Image (cartoon, rainbow, N blue to C red; front, side, top):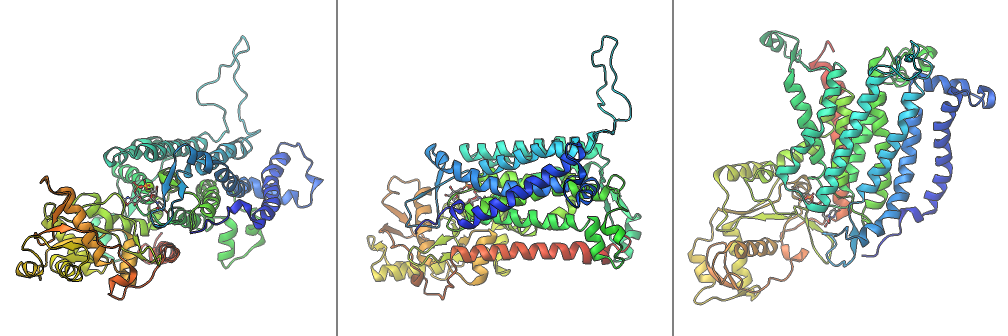
Length: 592
Ligand code: UD1
Ligand code: MG
């Protein structure tokens, strides 16, 4: 497949950069210059309105400015880094481009996340210094010899707690960046990388505690008997709420990474969730409330009736926006490189980092339950993956869909169970439920033996063993219902199953044979193996499955189409999240 030209090479990106970068720089610089009195207010028209907006919704203008800068910064920095990464061995084969010999630069999430982090660092003085200058309520203490003798509480009037909140988010983000990059380099084992986000969420949880974060769960007011049964309107979960938030951090860190493998899907989902959170935050800003409310008074439009220091809710959502808008910029810039056909891979670095950034916004913005609603596809993908993640069903190294080399059509990839590695009753039960729901396709011994027999009769893939062949296969019960394989338990594979893309049975048989060879303990395993039914046959390679070989009316879905389906699911998840949060919640929690 021909490589597309880099996004930085297009005329459109140069034109938009030359317009938007100066505009965003002035969004950053002008309010700061006015506040510091380094620029007279009459130098531009509407400067009073600009200053008033900046003072009322503190940090929003620099946030918008930095979001634009992170977009262009990511576009440029990823373009500049990818060759160096490739030269240092950070590259991977695109699993869904079978004919391509070209290797794609890996771990490009690292430069992208660095751009994002640098933007967050630079944001600090715009938000916290400029918001507090001249507000000190008592003079600085000086000792007799003129030295500093202040106390550890620092300047009065300075937003210490908000800054601590912001810094705890940065700490968590830095730790997820290190974890992700180490995983890209060393392929860390699950048992080590699972608990690390719990430990790195400690600063964030303590700051939540210091900010008197709520730990209560409102009991639904509908049905009416529920509150009577519980005996209270709110149940305080106390320590358990902190456990929930720590686990949320683990979930968010890993959930994007396990819904990965087709071009653009990791960045696309992070972009949609971040954008949805921005929309959710915007609903709490005064001018949006004014637009949505029936009482449209000029007073509200001009924000004169809003004081964000008193209005804590506005402050929390401004905080969340300060993390999410630059993330939207970074994701959009990275997607330009990572979309199909990918010019870069983002690596675990990006997946962990983006997940952690979303978790920080939810926890520190005090809407951790709402946050989970925006992760509906990830929650579904995690629940679906559980049998494989927790070892009830074998989990191959890669669960990305398979691809037909000649057509580019995708089919669900499979996990097979050799005769020596059978699954237990629990695993079988889980697979049968998923099959009943139409989310997986199971492969049974009898069905596979029929394929084996057909191939043997066509002279494909089999050399007749001594005295063995079709007849013996028939004699061993072709109709066996024993499950020998399943399509992998991921959302991407399930979408393919639901849409009617079928795995070629030749491919399943090939996988079964490889698995038999791998688990066989006899010395002859490299040249022979047992068939699904246990009959010994000599192996000949089965020709690679072609789309026509399936012969079962498989639907053609290529990588870009599966990406659109996955993104459509994510968008539908966001729409459902808004409906649950603002419509269903109003019915279930009538007094909220
Ligand atoms: C996770 C998934 C694994 C999936 C992999 C794909 C689990 C438990 N693990 O593993 O099933 O196969 O992500 O990222 O669910 N790649 C592509 N195209 C892409 C993106 C990645 O072919 O658009 C391939 C490249 O070879 C790349 C590799 O995936 O080098 C990266 O895999 P890695 O991130 O190391 O996999 P895991 O996160 O361990
Ligand atoms: Mg990964």
